[in-house]
Image 1: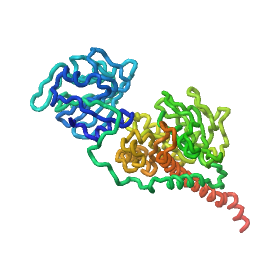
Image 2: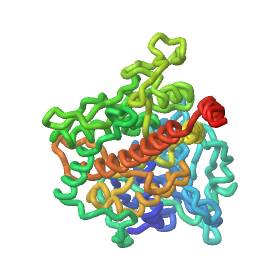
Image 3: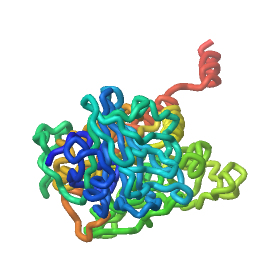
Image 4: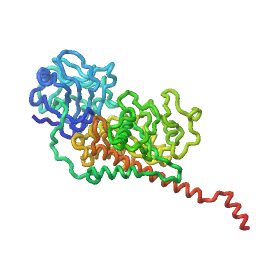
Length: 482
């Protein structure tokens, strides 16, 4: 039994759910089974996660997701993962996710034998109660929408459902883990060309990175790449991934995991070592994750860029690092400064970044631009953002979903698309995978190229400054000539 939900919208919902590829199985349609609460519960109770989708006459598509089963027990269901969404408004795509406000004080779902699908305490979306008959090609549902338990981000509900619950269809889908068959053929032309991903290509990338050495004119022993991004995007994991490639085994030198304010609390310029013990000529610098009201702030970021913060300094969430701090580095060496800034973004939750956090990153970007430091964006977790990539990692540069994500990030950060670098970090694996390694080294090599170009600019400025006589020398030379 086929429903109206398209692959495009399924991809979007799958991304919002954020736990990998999903199969959507249609359980209930009011045009087929009737708009009746009893029938809804017979077909949808105890089915695990579900998505409810409503379609109206104005061309809007919206609904709700629950990660827990529907029931008929007349009780609220605490579901921290539940969300309301809209996919289309008045004939135009407008994908927006509305998460639950507070899982401690608000409920995600409501189970009741006389209710159709009902989300939130209050309720935010009650589709219908009892039985509703079709009238003139649509169902005038007797439920309602009301902002209560979910964050509507300033939208009024009429901007979601056009101010009515007159729907042409309501569908409920069961959501299970697995790969679904796409109704459209996969894109085969790569949007970013690379040589064939073979063991030889991996060796070439490895050799390029091992041979990298910054110019000695500025006294640089290595270059520093500062990784910056929201909590949980995979900054530490990227370092572990790169280190794993050169160690020849899965490595976890940098602590990583899940915590509300992130695992990393210090400034850690990590070195990458080969199996021989040799250290490569770059450092991946990990630091606190970005949060709206906490985490790294703009002044501390400025000190990081300029090399004023010492290695392994542990940030104090209460007291800001400043020049009065006894560890403040007043005369940083060139090797202490940052030579490339890497913003790290989770591709699977790209649409969920709060606007205030985007603004914060934009402020950081402006400072980077003022200093002329090169920057790039790394898109992590591409396997969770696209099921085709999850099954075949080498398809990352033929994936339309990843291409769309790259384009979106390029616009968001105002950077060329070749500054947006997709990767998948080692996370579940216990053995190295050539495709994961190739993605990581492709990104790393590009970052080293950016840093190398920046160092060349600094050298040219230094050379120009040294060749240009100062004012006093010019006056003295003129006096001698007289």
